[in-house]
Each structure stands twice: as C-alpha cells, then as structure tokens.
Length: 205
Image (tube, rainbow, N blue to C red; front, side):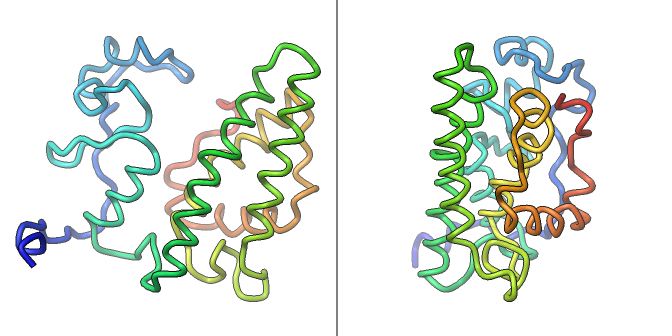
C-alpha cells in the first residue's frame, strides 16, 4: 500500500523524445563513440548501450528493461497481459529472444569460420522454432498471443527484420522455414507504430 502511494501516475501514451535528436551518429557507430558524438545519449545510458530512453529526466537503458518501463510508466495499450500465467509466458519468451535468438544472430553474422557459422545457424533455427511453437495458433490472431500485441512481439520484430535483410544478404538466411513468423511479421509491419519507427532495410545491409 505504501509502495502504491509513491508510484507516479501513468502518463498518456506517446513516443518519448529521442535522445539522439540532433546528434551526428552514423548507423553502426561504435558504442565508445556514442558518448562523444551525442552527450544526451551518454547521459541516458551510463553503460553506453542502445537503446536508451530519456523520459523527462528518467534515464533507462537495455531493450527489455525499456519495454517494462514503457508498460509501467505510460497509459495506452498494455504490453503485458493481465492474467498472471500469460504475463509470465510473455516475459519468458521475451527473455528467450534476448538469450536464445539474438546472440546466435550475431554469431552467425559475424563468425569468421564456417564451423562457427554452422553452429550458430543451427542454434538460431532452434531458437526461432521454439518461439514459433510457443505462439498462439494463427487462427486466434497473428501475434504471439493471438490478437493481442505484446512485449514478446516487440522483442523479436527488429531482429526478424535484420534476419530477413542483413542475414539473408550475407548468410543466405531463409525465412520460408518459419511460415508462422512470416505471417506474424506481415501483421507487425502493418502496425502504424512499426511503420513510424522501422529502420530502412537498405541501412541494415
């Protein structure tokens, strides 16, 4: 009860101001350069990690932590369901993206020898297959939970885009092996929020 009294009231959902506005940051800039090129970013992310969020002086970084913060701090469509079991499921598979998909994407893209790339490709395929198997049937809706867009969808979307662009161009990644994810991404791409923030695929390649 005492904790609830100290909670800030939820603000109306909006896109917070970008901390990199007005900064001369090229795509792919090294993390050690970001603080020099953009002091507001350095103030928002003391670990030097992207993404970073500055919400009226409240500085948050780390992708998954930023998502949790947005869910808690802003009103609007929730990123987590209200039912405890579904809530736990979304958190579990959001973590799965971070732990069992993203690292293998990086390994496959940047590994120098063919053996390491083969291992990363197999691990990435398994991570995607596990995520796909955990999704609601497409008959219930296109997203991870069906009709409800959630944190799990947000966690995977930018990486799937990179797989279908950079990884396809440089490592011959074939998205047709994940038909459920292909249908899912079509629905993600149709969302106004995605269209407003998506990175131009040409910049990823």
